[in-house]
Image 1: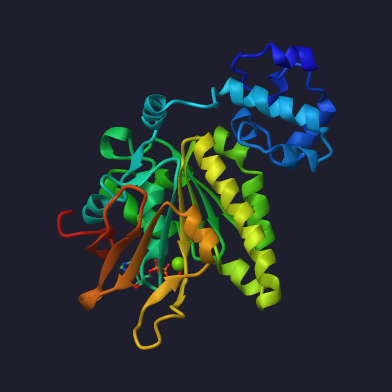
Image 2 (image 1 turned 60 degrees about the horizontal axis):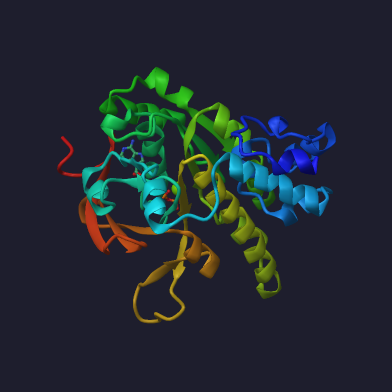
Length: 324
Ligand SMILES: Nc1ncnc2c1ncn2[C@@H]1O[C@H](COP(=O)(O)OP(=O)(O)OP(=O)(O)O)[C@@H](O)[C@H]1O
Ligand SMILES: [Mg+2]
């Protein structure tokens, strides 16, 4: 197979197209969740080796997939060009879009964290609608993959929000691919096997609501912390790589705990430790304000200034005063 592979710089459509790959290897790749060229191009050699694929074959297969998608070293000016593929997804709430300078970016991870009832899941519901809008309306002209770990997704609520955006309640649910995750392992496996679903359903947004709840309840005590963080790290990397490979937005929600270094204040911080902190590009803190208002505060971002804005949860969804 080596000769065939070395000559390649064609764009392959499916992993079966990679020359010299036997059906046994193709099956092994599929078993560990690499069913598409896109996801294979972001695989590591170690992942393939752990599935019983020889190291040399693994290296060549990944290289073929990367070449097929032109993933290699790039110059700064080319990087700007690559970043042109990044799209922004409107949240459907003007003030929040302003805070995010247009909306939620594809190819990166956006985290909403806050106390119960702060509006995290409501926002996720609204994004299920806005992602289906055309690009001219701030949408991504695509569908959503919704991984629900707390069983709080309500299709009726999405239907209630849809008309404001000009989408029929009957139509909106067709754009949602839903999975309930029962354990942290199930949650991880769902995502590991998601590449084909993402491709076939034109998924442009992946939501995990909430990312930490299972990890937090299953791994208890200090002894288990290292192991938890290792699993979490793997899970978040997979999410990041899928988001890159398919140019989707990735949104996670997260719970908070009292800040250990703030005994006398009501400061809270997101759970998940440094691993989650490093992986989330934009982190937005949601809290309850007066008169049923909600405050969204951008607390970390690689390119946006910090700031906070007010918003409201109404029957129509999440909105601000500018939204009529
Ligand atoms: N149809 C509706 N009209 C107005 N407000 C609503 C509606 N549905 C839900 N809400 C409000 O949304 C809030 C719940 O928000 P949400 O479920 O998003 O919280 P959360 O941040 O996900 O909390 P948790 O940590 O418990 O998951 C409640 O205050 C509720 O009153
Ligand atoms: Mg919730």
